Length: 361
Image (cartoon, rainbow, N blue to C red; front, top):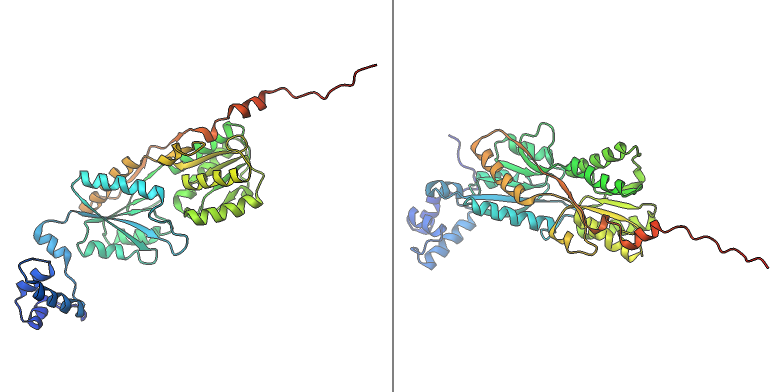
């Protein structure tokens, strides 16, 4: 049997140094009121100085109380989406409800993109039965490695070939098709695509955009695609610069509602009217989409169903079931940003005005 790591002091050693029993150390570290405050503080200080950590997993196994699922939002080193992002808030709320209805607690945490191996430690330490990860970002390989190490994970993201972990997501390719078809059906010919295709979900939405253009016998114009990030401030900077240099478009397909809303605001500031001059479609169908002016046409992702599916997927992974891919229904919710206004319609239908003729004398 191998010796314990040199930086892990056993509870018996703390008991010897503190001059108390092992059971007293155990109670003190668990926060029991049976140990007086002075003794408890001495034991805790000793444990901290000796870098001792309680094996939460062992405690939970003894008590039969492991009822926690970790929900993790990876954090990019640059332009990271804040937790306050409307999409995250909406999905986190649905996950909290879904976990509560199943009798589980939610442990929410953010982990840097270079520290995803911490996910394995969350489970191994016993802090959680499994992990739900919101978004693959550019970390499909790291997530696959964790799954291959038998870490129970479920991921909100895109279905990729040979994925060893369970994935729940909408039909991103179909979503891209639906958005682009609607813009084309309104006579829009130069559709600006906004989204970072390095991300798996956005890449599939771009494929749908391209499919719809090819279907309509149109060419994909590289000059009408821009890698706009999801983070609000970075998106606004990138869009401001883009709109200063790109004017020849009559529609926008944005890969998030937040990007779409930012685009509408910037266009309005420039004097370009939505939908009279430019039609706009977003993605997610957040509650804000129906409250802004004009209201936003958007591709709906059913987040309540997504949360329920993610909880079931991580519990299945914890049981040792084979990974599954769950693709949720995707549909377009049409609102004012793709509906011609009366003013625009009347202008289009009005007969051309004839130049005045000179009267004969």
